[in-house]
Length: 275
Image (cartoon, rainbow, N blue to C red; front, side, top):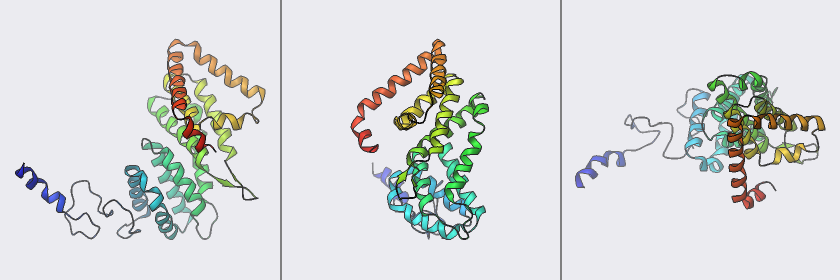
């Protein structure tokens, strides 16, 4: 037991600090000091390095969002001074949100914060405008992606779920100061749901179920007044067509059952979040 303590002593006493000379454990990122991200962009050569490290930091420690997002936005504000760097920032956040498992919610929260607190001068385009343009690019390939190979569908599904989180978290202030959701995202998600049902392979159907689960029924309720009878019939036809295939029916019904059980267990929490 004593020998074991001696073996690990160097790791316990080593200084994980930005200013530590050269002695870092393998894989340790020397731009971080302990578990915080407070030193701005000191030691970073590019915006991409700084932003990517912060995104990785959020992925590992999501609880630090509230305490460190203000410092991050302030630092990025001082760095982003042109459309090119703003575009680079949007792409970094988008890639993280659609490629790192379980980061879509955090990515959407980050996008909402930056859309309200990030400014560049001169400002020809905003963070939100560039973000929606990036999503539009992916959206235009929806039919091809839903029919693609396993890799293409996996990327498409990540985009769909990120868009759902973005719809729930991206706040837009109206002319009278009221906070609303982006209607264009609502319309896009309804179309993506149609695309998923119209290509009823198993993982497309599971993605559709996850989309409904993530949207917490908000998508359906808010779309009810806008949806025409024809669009409702189209969605119903896609749903019924999916049920005609035994394998698809099994996957879809299992997913829906899981969603309903989950909503039943978290009804109280959902009621608070949606208010």
